[in-house]
Length: 162
Length: 374
Image 1 (cartoon, helix red, strand yellow):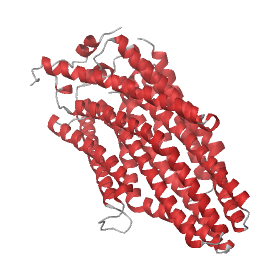
Image 2 (image 1 turned 45 degrees about the horizontal axis):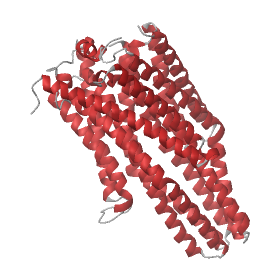
Image 3 (image 1 turned 45 degrees about the vertical axis):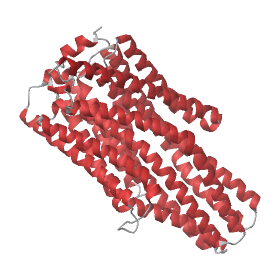
Image 4 (image 1 turned 30 degrees about the vertical axis):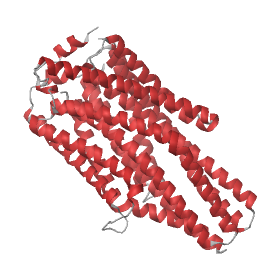
């Protein structure tokens, strides 16, 4: 097994376990509560509107919007970390078939690993900081994943029928 | 071009080799993995045809009824309608989760089958880990499916029912099995075991494997590019539109302007549908890409002629493109696109079953040669 393969497979397994542990924690301690809060906020918003208490209705709608913003990202992070982890492992097994020298393969592997960690991290950080920092982190992470995947597709296609 | 027998011989996977022996970890994981993926996809197709659209229509009707209750100043009525919406959402959400988790665990099972040569554990322990993994991979989706029906009946907890508890238990079993694999990999790396030849031969560089590998990577890349586009252009617009439309419903209904309120409810339904199909297109193209890549490694175990293996590969790749593209077009083309997308899904299922038959034929041949047929 080459160095790039070891890097990808070990990182992939670690990321999969991390993603699943996060999912288990989220399902046990946060998901149900978040869903209840989201549903209750929307129902409260409509109920207050029925009572013609419009400022309260708007405040409840705002709570719904913020809770949904968090929920979407929390679920996205779980699925993206695990999905990317699987990609790392699969590519790890096949990485010696890339038509690049090992030094370049290690660089591509590192780009994919860093992107796979940083992209979902940027997404989840948006729930605590709505500033540009987490968004920039997510964009950089996804760009790294896309560029690395482009290089890998090229490397596999160039390998041809050899 | 290498034939099946030649590939198997080169891989050292002939009869008697422990790597794919009867009830070995790798065999359990490959058959279990393909079975989980095919089962998850069949479940997804049934869900899409019989539940998804009907459920969306019921949610829309309940939201409209809630808007009317706002107009009639009936706060209790509003809460009743939202309770109904909550039930519809749970109905849909648990089905989506069942579908997604079955397929994801199927992928993970295939992945673990791939890395078995690098897992430095004895075969008995590997088999235990594979069994534990598959048990968790079945318990979790089945329990998630039951959440809607079991609810909080006899539950010792306030918000979590027995089905959720069992689903979490299933997840825990999967995590323990993966940790076991990680320990095995760590031991392999530390020992520097000399299984390079067998590990390297996992991938036969045949036309079928190459097409699946390159096609799969390309699909994943396209999925990521589209996901990036969606996040940049649509995600925040959808979130803003979601709240703005709900605000319009509330304010128009409170002003007894029911025509505008109803229009906003319809717009809300369309917005939700637009969001759902775009996310589904993104998710499915990446999932099919991963599936194609994983199946590239299974090709040495598909005991079919090269012509048939190519056929299944082509069918799988065509279905993998059709489904996400036509899911994306559902908003513009309606049910016609939905029907074509379902056909795409069916093509993938047929190709998967074709490959599964090939794997079963291979196991039968191996067992017969090794005298394991009873």
